[in-house]
Length: 348
Image (cartoon, rainbow, N blue to C red; front, side, top):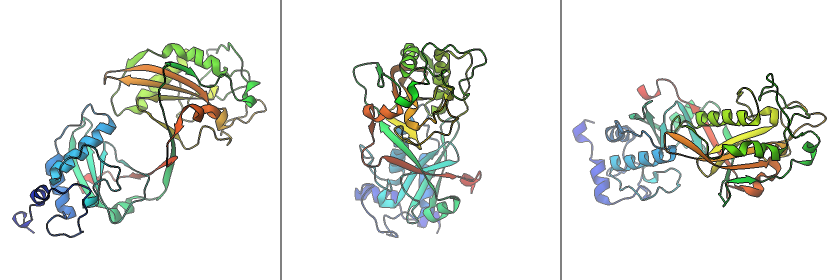
């Protein structure tokens, strides 16, 4: 069909006053936008828009607002957590700065369209690819949902909170106050009985970090921000060098997990902190540590885009974690499918 023969879907939708959640019959000649035409409208409306300096949450909202404008829909004050996010067009929207597509809490639907927005390294929208669920499913080689536990952080009146006054009972005989680490001691080496600081001393050594600032590498650079904090933590604990092997817990020598929070959502990975499952680490004396024996140092922070400022510190054992931090209501586990997109995905 030539360009001139296509209906003006955008004007028709705008004149109808339909919202993004109002159902449209698939194939409706006036309002249902065919996939190839949908892709063109989105490219015309979104390409060249800058998302620079926006947090991932704000970036997603701005992108969805731009999709509304490109298709003729009014922009809602807030986007309902529907599946898909644009039910009228059976359309979901994903903003991608990498080729690792993540779909949370649902399987790929063959009845759905997926608008995948490519963002350049300098945060400018360069291309929109619209693909059907059946086509996307071909790229999903595992079909496996990766589960992830989450909790919510609610601040109180104190900037420093020692949630756990002491370690779990099995750990007590293996901790020792006032341990000084030698030049050869690495924060990523295996924990040893008698070299573990008590949870209270971890809290005392890390407390001076509250109020400290460090450069912000960028709004979408959570991993690099976490590494900057990890370096400061190693220094405050008394290590002579910083090392990180990317494994759980972050500081194996202290069975310590470090978290940096710039939002209320705490991502906990694949295991609940209070779990009594054994950790995949070497024995500490006669003890095979469990997840609930792990210590957590959780820092809250704010950023102005240039500097990160640490504002609060919480230290707890895994056993006590949910006594202070509330599990997410409803789904305790958030799950995601991870799909590596082909290098030529946006050029096809």
